Amino acid sequence: MLTRRHFIITSAALFSAPLATAAAAQDAVDFDFDASVVRHERAGRNPWGLHSRFMPTRVAVREGLRAGDIHVDPVAKYLYHLGNDGTAMRYGVAVGRSGMQSPGTFTIRRKEEWPSWTPTANMIRREPEVYGPFAGGMPGGPENPLGARALYLYRGGADSYLRIHGTPQPWSIGTSASSGCVRLVNDHVMQLYEAVPLGTRVILHSPWR
Image (tube, rainbow, N blue to C red; front, side, top):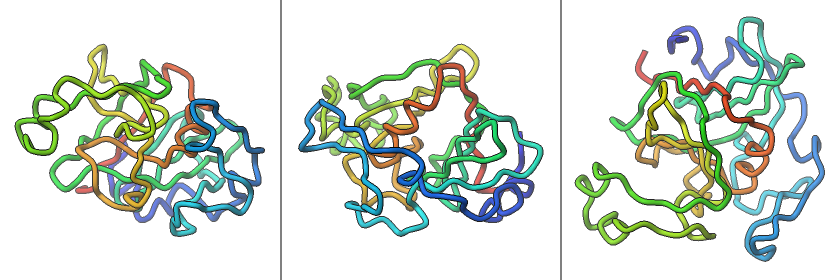
């Protein structure tokens, strides 16, 4: 696994300046769960008020990384999905709060549209007043914490309970806000979901080394 020293320094060692925005790279397509709630962004739109650096951006990739992989930089709050053309799509994300990061190498073994959500036993134990009411689970929908799409991360053959997922809280992007998962705004996770096949390798880099 790449160390923080190798990878992070705002990822400058491996990724270069932006080449193009995702909005310019692909046309908008509506999703029919509820078109009044979730739409792909149109060129030039930023309805969430994200800082411009957290908008989808295509960047050049330095040598030494495997095409198809996903890398998450928890310091700069970026997710990179590497293409096979020497570029990567970069998205702004929210990551785990201090002490809740789980760096390592994972594999996407499951993908869900509008996933249901059930807090883990650790989440309920840690914050019963927040998560206890949802111990029985919550169906998918615009208010679900997993948002419009979820990519389920496995370590070996076991579910790690970590996800790359959407969020109904776009204001959290660019912060350390989650219980360990990686959040994107719904429009962006929908784009990523379509581009990422099962079996994709995900490297969650450490913020500490």
